[in-house]
Amino acid sequence: MSTDRTRPAGRRDQSGPRSASNGPRSTPGGPRSVPPQRSRRLQPHRPLRPHQWFAERLLAVLSGQRPVHWMLGHTIGEAYDQLAELAPSTPLRATHGSRPVLRHCRGAQPATGVVEAFASIAAGDRVRAMAFRLEQ
Image 1 (tube, helix red, strand yellow):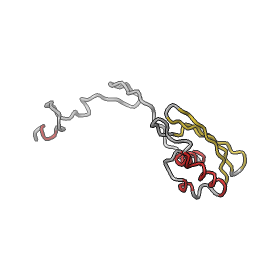
Image 2 (tube, rainbow, N blue to C red; image 1 turned 135 degrees about the vertical axis):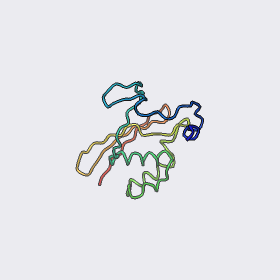
Image 3 (cartoon, rainbow, N blue to C red; image 1 turned 90 degrees about the vertical axis):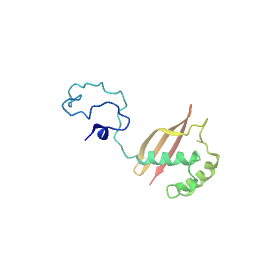
Image 4 (tube, one colour; image 1 turned 180 degrees about the horizontal axis):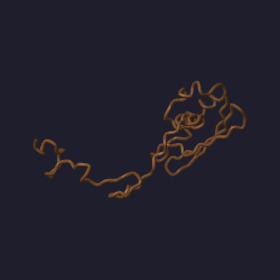
């Protein structure tokens, strides 16, 4: 078999693939021949807490990315009516071409079945705040 067939396209050297014995090696916890790249460690995926999930949805509606009826079933009565009045003005809309994103969202549980939450939203160089109360 010719090395032309085993060589990746664009590769010009005449050597074939290295075997494990003649290439750079690293062992767990041992020295490495290539310095590690500096990169941010990936956090394991954690499911969103209810107030974080709700904040993401609320942000999508108040920024005009989603219609108000996207919140049907998650808001009821007067809360939905207030959201329907507020949403058309898109108070959290994008500024200077930057889409708003949820920076932080924290919640407290003052009583069983109740979460009071606040969030900070960044859009470009602006930071805004939002607060809400969730009840079961």
